[in-house]
Structure formats: structure tokens, C-alpha cells
Length: 164
Ligand SMILES: Cc1cc2nc3c(=O)[nH]c(=O)nc-3n(C[C@H](O)[C@H](O)[C@H](O)COP(=O)(O)O)c2cc1C
Image 1 (tube, rainbow, N blue to C red):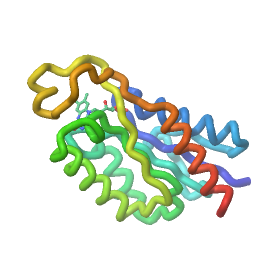
Image 2: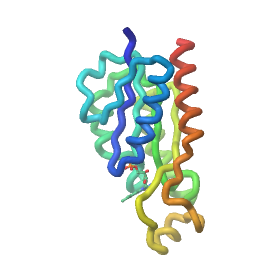
Image 3: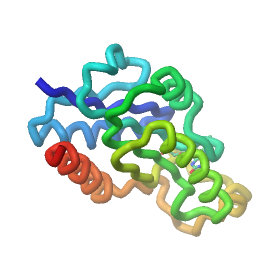
Image 4: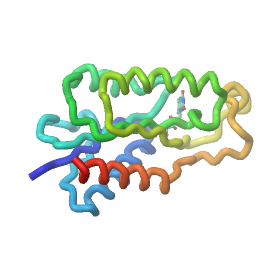
């Protein structure tokens, strides 16, 4: 029986909820799927396809994600890699470039079949100076996640698995 994994790291729960959404779409499509935080993963070799997700903090992917990738450098079957960032699409170009640089570094290690960058969410408004520093537009919602985009990506992943 083929088994799939959605593995995530999350500090404030938004990436976890995205992982759960992607995992539930796989399950609805009859794929046997584990949805686990990276620290809960016991045997990574049992999975036919792996989807990994991490948020961006301080313009970098979380250190916990970095450690996990370092420890599992040889995993090959990365079907999907998703990154959750509040600033990527809406912030200043320099931040976008910095985040993209870190994403590219991990892409070159993981060689995922598909990569997505999703808008994230924060729990409270940033101070005015931070909005200016990051170049955030006025009136940006605290939770900027686009569930339609997330669902579409999950379906793209399913099509990739099916066409294998
Ligand atoms: C302390 C802190 C630092 C953050 N730094 C960044 C950042 O550098 N770039 C970015 O795009 N988003 C940044 N964010 C936003 C997070 O990426 C976003 O809120 C994400 O959805 C958090 O995921 P989580 O809830 O799974 O931890 C930051 C959020 C916090 C609270």
C-alpha cells in the first residue's frame, strides 16, 4: 500500500493548517496520508511521496526545517515543497529576493516536483514602522492565506502522483 506524507513545521499554526488542508485533500482522493510535524516523523523511508512545508521567519525558512533537511539529505521522493510567507508577494522587492534565495537553496537540495509559495498570516497588526520597513500595503488582512490557491496546488500534486 502506497503511503504519502505531509510534513510541516509551524510556530503559530498557519502552516500547520495549510498542511492539514493539503493532507485532507489527498485523503479525500483516497491517498493514504500521514500529516505530521517534522519532529513526529518516524520512518521517512516508508513514503512513496512527500510534501514538506515551512514558514518564513527573518527572511529565512525556519531553522527546524533546515535541520530536518540536513538530516534527511538523501530523501528523493519530494513531490511538493511549500513555503508560507507574509511578505513574499506584497513586501518590498529586496525581501522577496532574500526569501527567494533561501527557497532556491532548499530547492536545489530537495529537488521537489512542485514548489509553492503561499501567503501566510500573523496574529496581530505590525507596528507602523514595520509596515514601512517591509513595504506592506495598507489594509492588508492579518490572515492572507488563499485557500483556493492551496486547494489548486494540492490537486496539482495529486495529478503528479497519478501520472507517475
Ligand atoms: C516574529 C515573526 C517574524 C516573521 N518574519 C517573516 C519574514 O521574515 N518574512 C515573511 O515573509 N514573513 C515573516 N513572518 C510571517 C510568517 O511567515 C507568517 O505569519 C506565517 O504564516 C507563519 O507561519 P506559522 O503560523 O506556521 O508559524 C514573520 C512572523 C513573525 C511572527
